[in-house]
Image 1 (cartoon, helix red, strand yellow):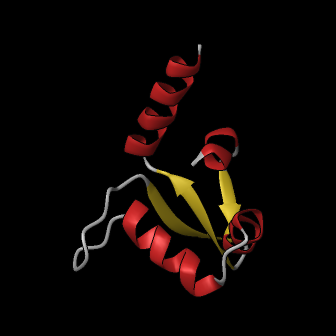
Image 2 (image 1 turned 180 degrees about the vertical axis):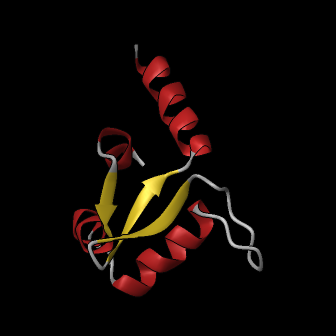
Image 3 (image 1 turned 90 degrees about the vertical axis):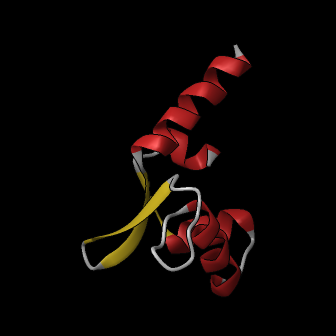
Length: 74
């Protein structure tokens, strides 16, 4: 979440590399942080496609969480 707070969008490959996670592990994490009709989730991130590759962006709810985290750090 911290990386997404400072960037508009991050590729799945970049997030996986930063967190040292395999693709399957990252997808499970994103399932929890995102929102899926079947599985639920917290609704903080969304997956989009930019230039033919999947990227992760923050939803409005995720942006609000980032703002709260920044306020707590001050």
